[in-house]
Image 1 (cartoon, rainbow, N blue to C red):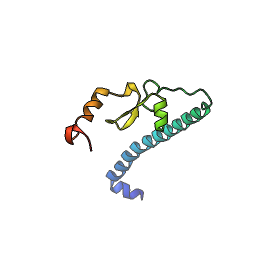
Image 2 (image 1 turned 30 degrees about the vertical axis):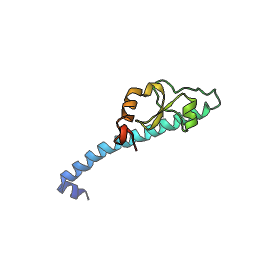
Image 3 (image 1 turned 30 degrees about the horizontal axis):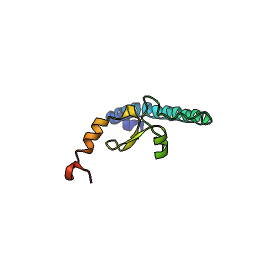
Image 4 (image 1 turned 90 degrees about the vertical axis):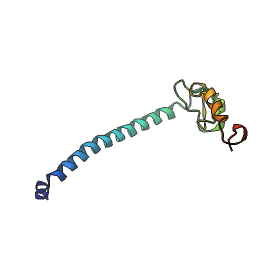
Length: 109
């Protein structure tokens, strides 16, 4: 097998390059997965604390249901097709989008 690589050095070089790219990528994925698991554990520990009824500044997450979104003060954004807090919406742009439909009077089907 070693003789094969000596006869075809480009194949060995190709394998070395692929491994040098794959190994750091795999390590980054494993580290990211471990970080996310730790964050989930911290979130579960704080479930008994008071619920904050506004979306955190800098985040656009409005929960997992319509009720949660409404409770957090979020509004449905037709352009993004999701519920968003004020800091993540552009009401003028969304309004323009809603008037640009291809149906009669700019409506969407």
